[in-house]
Image (cartoon, rainbow, N blue to C red; front, side, top):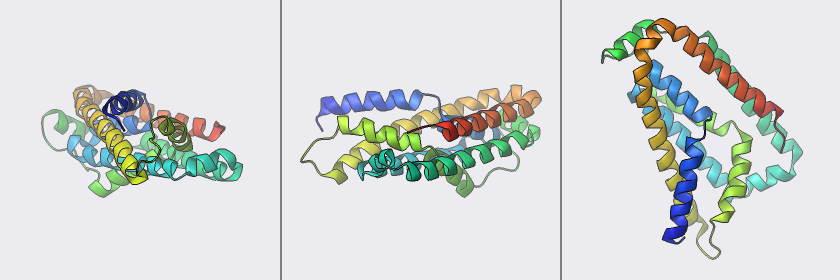
Length: 210
């Protein structure tokens, strides 16, 4: 890939990352509730999932999903079920008022999520939308170079997008800390708004067509 073409891909990756989606929403929620340190692992899970989707699209799975109604439906319903389940958990989650108060004062949040669980949630949210896989399958071929190693192209595509997405999600999680004083009063409302958003995204995934 030429440097000029890579710059175009970099700008396209930035535009994709800035588009509101479940990855950013999850990092925003975790940033507020658990602090930046734990949310770094959430973001690592998200970019790992996106890298796997890029690899799968280069391997042809996205094209296969375009032609297989059954495969698309299975992935769609599994992804929708996970997003809705996560949304219900967020909706019902306690406000963690004490933890938010501590975070706003520079202290650790109460009952922090484990690094492994934060990573796993980020990974599963990234993998839960079959439309992302199909999108990469139609987006990446515009930047592929015939005759160039597929592994090298995967490293460039995945590495560039992961770096942009990770930076965006960490910045988002860090900025979320500014909401902490407000959430000492409205933490339950925040949980229900983000939980409802995940339920809505899950419903959209369930209603999506190839």
